[in-house]
Image: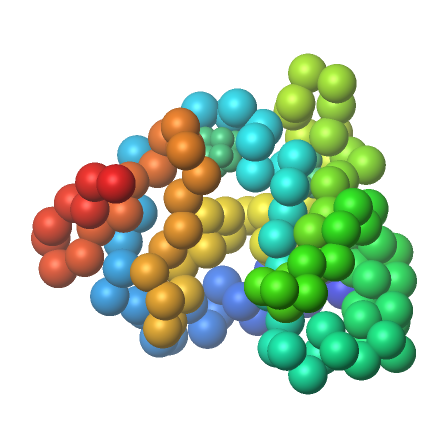
Length: 132
Ligand code: SF4
Ligand code: SF4
């Protein structure tokens, strides 16, 4: 748990010190879709390395309780679901959920935020709402 707390604290600090130009409004509808297919993007070189990919999957599975469902080599990403999600789609580990969950939908520095269809959040940039 100490790793999860340290990760949460450091990420929040960096975001406060260096805010991005994207903003999210709206709120979570608790549909659970984002926990059914968790996509972690890697570099092409990382996904080509069986050693790196294997270690990453073991670490993420141990630390977050995620389960690998697919390695997408075309889009160089690892796709997981989560053993903490209840049959009703809720989070069974809400208090200790990792940062990747707390910060979802991710607001990146260099990329436009990606929202799942039906997500309750809306993205804005420079005061303008982006409708997809
Ligand atoms: S997809 Fe959006 S609305 Fe649904 S649980 Fe995730 S954050 Fe909430
Ligand atoms: S820890 Fe909770 S919020 Fe995060 S993916 Fe699992 S069920 Fe979803």
